[in-house]
Image (tube, rainbow, N blue to C red):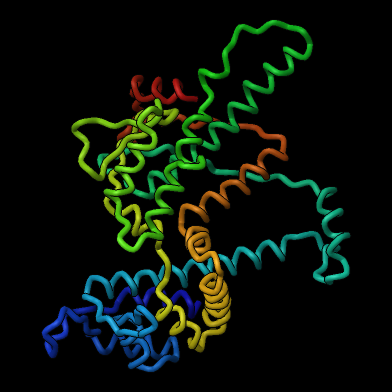
Length: 359
């Protein structure tokens, strides 16, 4: 509970331009809110102030201290709050899974092999609430991730409900006049996660010193100019591109794609959080710091940086989910929205037919 209080209190901090300097440096104001955060985290005023408003930059063997603007300081503060909350959720999930596992699966290292064999004989019923396909006036990084997950789940759905039945009929010598390629979305998945797909190009931009979203969109359109799934229109702005998803065309605004994909907590904040007196926060951030240091020592730094991006982590977790689904007997329930306005007892036939068309 104290860790959640820290997350909430971080949202109460206020940053303004420091009047004592000519530069655009930030200053932590609202001392009463800061004092509350100090009492919760057990970290000194100076350490929190420096971690939030300054950044240590290493260049050519020298260490320089760069002052952050109020907006940058706010972003750093929000990033810390988000990471703490994420770690709290991870701990809760681990504890719940541990409590719910069969009692005969102990933690003794000598039982690891037995546990793996036992797990195969344990049945389970899992419920997956699928992501809803999203398209808005402005579609950003989150919509790309959600729709990418939808594409994978749709691909699994097609394999489970159409391709497997067709293969079974053909095995028995029964002719079936149905072309699965018309509903196969493998080309879209290849566009997103292929060798030179959207994720790879975006990760490449994250490792470049001056990588930006406009360059990401330009490279994407050049590399995939012959793809039927990528939509490039003359009226697109330099940071816009479209993807022809299974449910329809979505135009994405890639303005902050590179920044959102990096989303790495600065080392200054990471080290500051490890000094927190809250055991949950300090333990989790100690582990994150060790992981970061290992990546920094990695001789293949470029590859190490790519593996820490949001897209790379999302793709890895999604692959684990699909692997788990593939090993189970699945049943699907399709939910159809009757209208776009969330009104009861109102059915918009155009809206429902559009959803059925991609079901």
